Length: 452
Image (cartoon, rainbow, N blue to C red; front, side):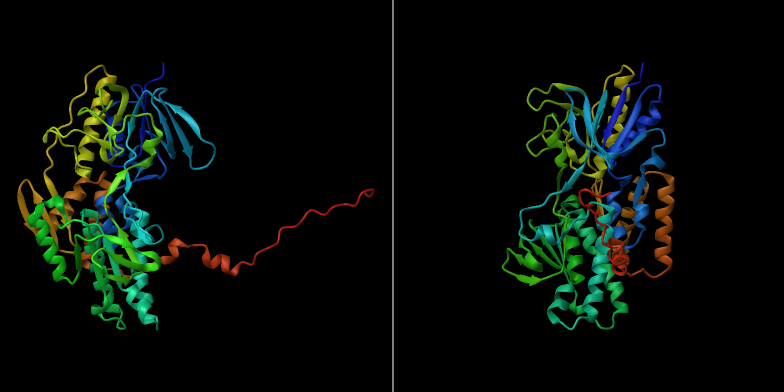
């Protein structure tokens, strides 16, 4: 008899940590763990702003699945459909036809995607910050804009190149904004053609505060610090249009910009719409505190179906009536409980509830600058920056990654920041195709009838 198969959909925080723990608690005779994800690594998203800033190597902000999950089966593909009634998933591999895979237990953890709005021009101009590719692109794009501004004779192009707009005042937006402002400040030392007063960083936030995760007092402190650095904060303001680089805001202001970074929240993966699992009003998988998928009205458990993280709505037992926030802090802890519960069920035990009180948050605001509100204690400046760094280096999986990240930080401390753009990464074959002439394919010669 084959051991039960546990299919893990997605290798983000929940998928990776749950699969890793399951592979340690259940040997191959007890269970087969299959991890399905279209990319071969887990991205540690809190490090994306630092990767974009060049503080750490992009490769060190990701965890290779095959290297970390040696006891699991890795499938490089995308789950396009889940039919729990039949206990099957439809897998679209990187290449080749789609196929179905059966399972006994499923962990639905495809995570989230950027929550965008139908704003004219956003699709053509916006840059997200959810993947390592986007982080690399953002860095190259911003540094490339400095090169453009330094040589263009067109004053309008120069102004637009030096306007950098960030939409969203949460962790991702503020950290990316602060880090990239540091990058540009350092880079300007090598651009005598540019005046630092010409550079404008603009934050657009729909609410009247930033960094709500660290509380109003620390959020207000962050706003003052950013404003003191010359960053233009537009609170209670919406982006209305960005067609052809013309930024139009709800406060009536309009200007041209060639950089628009969108970090205004996330939403559950659209893949969940192609499942027969019960979803909440915002598209999240409905779960019990045990992280078992359950009917939204009756609470009936869907045996063998589990979920957690950004794509799930999990009751917060420390805040009755509320839901666990879509944070890495919850995702990592939920993954541990989820894996333990599946192992208990397979071994004949009963699952336990997930309970964790959110302890606060830490945010980096560039080199030597940060803010933190942890266990009710408020910290700012250099101590908060150290807390931010050491918290996240302790959370990224594997000693290998921890050592590499620490080495990157040491090198960044000892030497000046690298401020070179590698824009050719995004179009690596362009020069080759330019020097390679097209060759007409031979056409089939028709033989006249009656000849050989």
